[in-house]
Length: 371
Image (cartoon, rainbow, N blue to C red; front, side, top):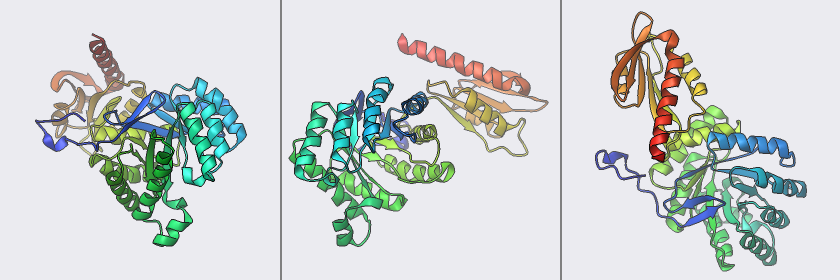
């Protein structure tokens, strides 16, 4: 995030981490915080998996992870990687051969815990495959699947146990002269995850993959993720994020970007500032915002739009946004451009007109970038 001398309370000083590459996406260092998701299709169903990857990419996903539990999945991975518009991470659990096959199929990264895949010779084979095929590795520690010796040592999943697990896996990679790795220490408990990530950030300079695992459904999972990831990102911790929801993966991407946008860490698409509506509203705010979110989903240019139901807060919010509409009386409201009153507009014309204004503004901003 750029330094803001006028409003220093908006500054976030990101933790300094090493930088690695996941395909064409840089992770860590001064690279933008990337947004990830994971497909929930059967990987061997290439058509369905690619369709989901494409939808996630359109929504803004920088990286997509795909589970590869069997040979049929790693065979399908080759075709998926070839057609995917974004780098693919192969999710490996225990079988070292699946990791080798995924690397050979073109995966940009392997999600694997090297200590879980067998003896030292198997680990060396996987690392060799990763080196030979330009794969990075994500060490993925999870509170729900910690090693037995750590549970025996600590009695239960705790930050110390999770970080120790992560550092043990890091040592295996470093002992094999492999340094293209990032790491996560996920838990469904927000307190546990946050404490583990803070401790991890002090213990290593590796890029950190943030996530609150098994966060829940769309509403509850969004809230948990916003609290957990939001606080860590505010502290400057995190180089790539994945929001875990029991929902369409596209929703994970949307929520991930909204979290980053709320902290000024990434900017993509139209940020709508809207009121919850009340008896003062001059038009149906809720239906209007819902329609605008759908109609403006294709706009990737960063800009702000205020939709406020009345003149109590509307003009003030419009001062801070690129385009604004404030409800008035007699079935009309006021359009604001760059914070200034522009023209009155009938409520019945509002949605189409605002979409037109946003698209025109987006085209102008993109043209200015090219110039």
